[in-house]
View 1 (tube, rainbow, N blue to C red):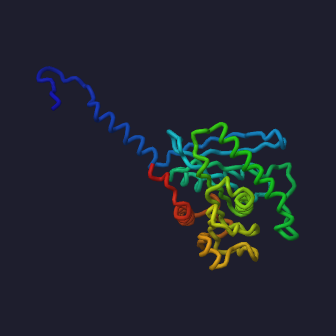
View 2: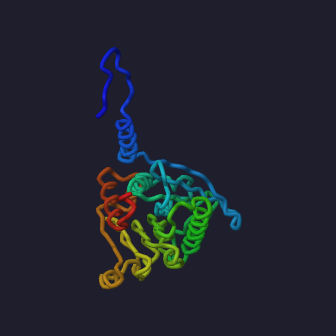
View 3: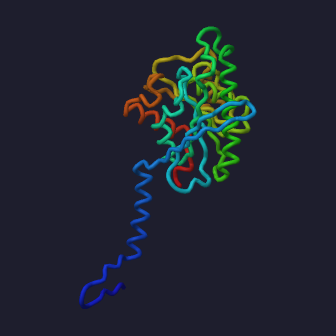
Length: 262
């Protein structure tokens, strides 16, 4: 029992339990209200003499043990800042318990993405460059953010970034737990059970022949392909509130992030 003074002015001393509960509720509300931290920096791959801008999205506080998502943007004409055009998805994933790293691939000095010819041939060099970017970022994270859980790595991307992600999973399956594309259309989804292969498809743009698995392949290999009502070009921050909600729910379903219970 807490006894109060019986005479004179009462001392305005806060109840310690109330203070502790208040601080806990404040932290919980920060998470619930979307208090996601965004940090940007540029790493330099000295072996390739290449600058690689990256953005980190994570909830304020302890990041120890968080699984990582490496996100690759869609092609945006070599314009800088393309890696910042998916903030709504990165924020939602951060709130659900991931440490999201969005990677800028194309630079203004790069050759434009080929728009003619056989895409799987003429775009392969740009995908391979993107894979090299992701490998470098993964190694940098291992060196500079050792508290993160890179054993539970998800590689994810939209369109061209989805093609890069699928090639990464094909070439380096031992580096990634799961790969997820938002409507990649050119690079075939790896026909494999490990890593887990997932894809969310748009409402308006079909994939090239052979990119998507047959119903039998998807069933036998536990590949997860989901249709959406979202157009291909509305999967970035240009999405409507309803489209954002649909994409977020599909991503959470496919990734089934265990860290969301943290």
